[in-house]
Length: 312
Image (cartoon, rainbow, N blue to C red; front, side):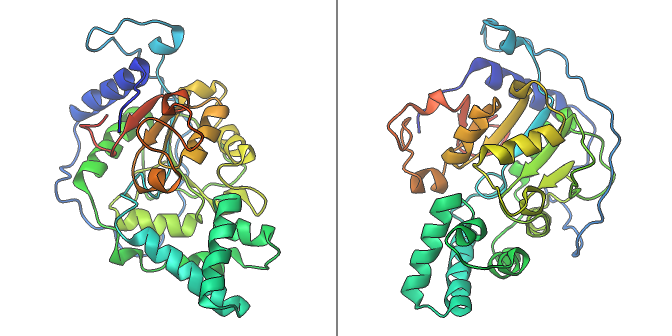
């Protein structure tokens, strides 16, 4: 797809990866598989990481104050960003959701598929959508059932690990263990985090399979957001940004493959990076236009095909 890359985003992300590529770090061509079992929550130090200004790259002059600034927080969606959405896992999750609905509510297979699709369309998260449709559902039970089997589909990708590590070393807090599930009383700043509609438990399982356990300062998921909100609700973005202590929302970068969620991030004031792929196709976004027929560049500050150093 055609790109619409704002020089400030392109330049600063390039600077981040160049700086991090020279930092001493373990080789990641064959990263070690994390041990099974959920990592214990770890409280990181509260120091704010102040990044130096990015110098122009490729002769692009600084045209506004936003071009001269750096970022405080890098936020990654999980599905479709940290791995390709067309690898079979998302279809596996959808089929599990259909089976859960069929067996739980005693409907036909066809009806279950229709209910699942309608629920997801309502809230961009099936659990919340089911509740909006009047179904009682236990979030943990549903997500554990639907998201199980990730180890059959999710694999370590050296290029993604390298890109995440580069951005994390540049913008995140120093790490001392696994990805930290957050509570509402412990804000942080200067962070690289995951923000997903699935539960923190299932997100952490996926990150272990991807070789990204310990790569992030925190995971914000369905437990943090609670029963009444999920992406793309403005309240979900507000809760995460407030918890992170972000006052200048432009200094928070969102990597997202759902254009619905990206539009919400943009409305929240964030700098946005659109990761194209299967989700974009499902949402009707193609060749520079969103599902409304508006230019993708009106919402996306940068467009990439995959999370790799070459793309950044």
